[in-house]
Image (tube, rainbow, N blue to C red; front, side, top):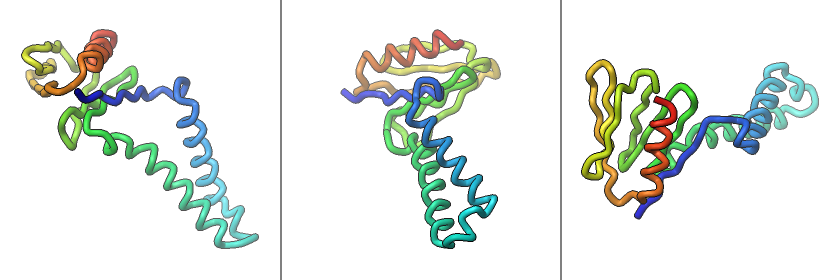
Length: 136
């Protein structure tokens, strides 16, 4: 049985990610002001590379895992047994059903998407359903 990796986009609960984002922002801002350019031009290149590498690692987390759910108070991105995920705004979801190891999400505009939940832990499925219940 496989687990789903859950990631709530909330900087209050993820202090390390918040610190890395602030560090990358400060490095980019200092490079924009060209503060490092006067002392040694290599420092500017390395600090710029480090800042963008930090951002790349933070924003590429969805590609690391096969089963991944990322959400905040406005929407959710669900990627299950697939290489690309589906994004939903919570206000656009009309209902969702769990039938025969499939999660079926219906939107108000009539669009219906089904996610296969075979070989996924029941605990992870329950957490996904609870997230959808709490926000729709």
